Amino acid sequence: MKKLYISALAVILAVTSAAASPIGKRVIGNNLISAAKAPAKAASPNAMTITDLETQVKGRYALEYYSPIPDENGIPFGNCYEQPMIVEDYFAEKEGDVNIGYLFLLNAILKGHVDMEAGTITIPSRFATVYYEDPDDYNDPGLDIYFTAVDFVDGKYRPNLERPFTGTFELHDGKITKIVTDDIWGYAAYDTGGAQVGWMEIALNSRFYLGHGEMEYWPGDINGDGIVNDDDKEQTVVHAVSDGKTATVYNAFRSGWDNPITIAIDDAAKKAAIKDQSIMLGGVNATLTTKALESTVNGLIRDVSWDIDKRDPVANSVLDFGLIVAHDKAASKDLVKFDNVRFFFKENVAEDNSGVAEIITDDNTPAEYYNLNGLRIDSANLVPGIYIVRQGAKTSKTIVR
Image (cartoon, rainbow, N blue to C red; front, side):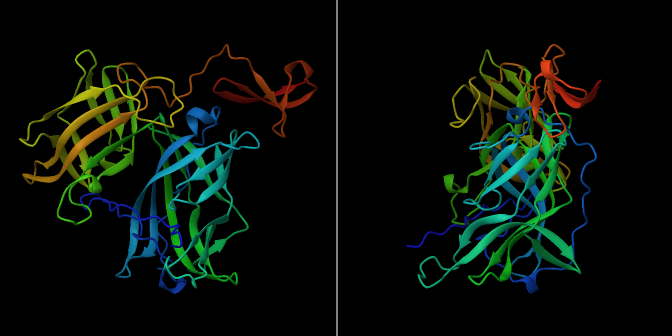
């Protein structure tokens, strides 16, 4: 059987405001895509200087964007969530080079570069994978799928393979790395003759959030087989940290990154509790409760090594809650029941790791000097000129006379 390179994507809960990306990813002809461009979100003017790829850039990202690709009814998919995008620096030839995987397509491995001083990331347009409409048809030559920057010209989306897609790093809520952009990216399909025949995805208003943990849960009969089981399991990137007494989780149940929940930690008893917690789901203010609508949901703390590819030498923690109900008090009804809820922390929740995403400034850190071409210069060999000085999390320019 010919290998199918395109992965399917899980359906997002109808209770949320986000739509899933096109399911069973397929190529859409140019003439079927709406010419209406979504309102742009301006790139942030608050670019942050990258001083440490390990803590500020590398890891799993959750992605939000707007897709004009139509569904079966010809309606744009609109707001989408993708889980996850992974950024690492394996095989990097120079500082700032990164590998990018799982951006919409499972088998697409992309390259990127982080300009650490400017706080930007560029992803060059390049071949990504091959798409076969029918994997069993050996006469199907397939379509070449390219990751590409996208221009919006004369009311149409046009691939631009000559330039990279660009985003800017900033801190979200003062602690979470986020990539923001008003640029457009997409996956364009080309036939064997090199002609562009359609699109697999177009993404506007993209926001990439660097998580520091994950969670999983069963939100109901997602696949429609009449049974709620492991096949319905949802997984999502979250930002999960703890100060030893209270854990904070962003993007729980894919509720977004401006809507964190808090969890009380009692490590001595290995117990955790969600108390009187509200959460916004699909524009509805819900309360997290037990099945009996009690406002305190109790869970257990398990110290296990769950992250098989983690770089951190410290122990992991898993918070296991079982069933959690999102209840709409105003309407006196349950919005959704999340079963087998687990929060996966990359650190031990009994310890203070609440500043894990922040870079600590140490004024005693030795200063590093770079010329304007980015080459590091020994401080003992400085000649008159302008230099970039990096000390801990601080970066500045200085003149040597």
